Image (cartoon, rainbow, N blue to C red; front, top):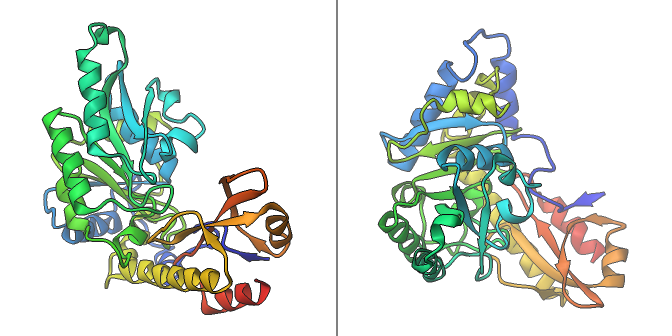
Length: 341
């Protein structure tokens, strides 16, 4: 079946598989203390223009969100997120399982607005009973958002300045970061993110790797005994070199950015295809996720030949579905979809 269900439905970029095979019989220390992890860290620091950043590798997005949030917050603190944020809706209570509340706020096309966050903080501290409430201890955003939308540099700067004024770390979920950075409509660069966020991660699982996320702590703010804490969460990979090899490849010769741009090019073609066929869009997305409104019977018929994601009900007779391109989407995929449509 033809699939546009997500951006992690295929395996890994051939250069990554080749490197894993080539290095397979090499012997290296475990837990990320190997030459490939160190080399990948240096390349990521260079790409971020953040020579003093601390880079750590974890295996997946949920583990990364859970560990970063869970280790940064005090026991009485929660994390602020958009109502539509990944940690709010699609992580099975992973954050709450650490004992921390997800404090959800209204969003604008998936994005948190600095003014909305500030009003919440003002109201919280104006409440005479706030010492009996879960205190805001971090702000979480994703870029791209769950709706494929992007923060502008001004929006990100406003959030960053607000967070620093209130001494709240700003954490950016970059599970699909490559597709955000290579969007045709963004003014945000990787060095911008490194300068404005206290911690963020560069997603590999959805951008060409078999698995893996690179967490970047930008302000000498890595939680104390971080490796021990990762191990307590059951997320420390003994063969850490597997992550190092993959990110070493991704950040060699700009591969991470070129394959992300390919996904954006395919998404632009996908948008043109749907528009030409007369389909309605739920919202404008400048990244690799496209949201289409289908009549329910039409959705059911199409699902017999093409895999896509249910997103939300639009009304009684229509549903919003998501089509996602990726680093591996091909011209043949689009041609096959056009023939079906």
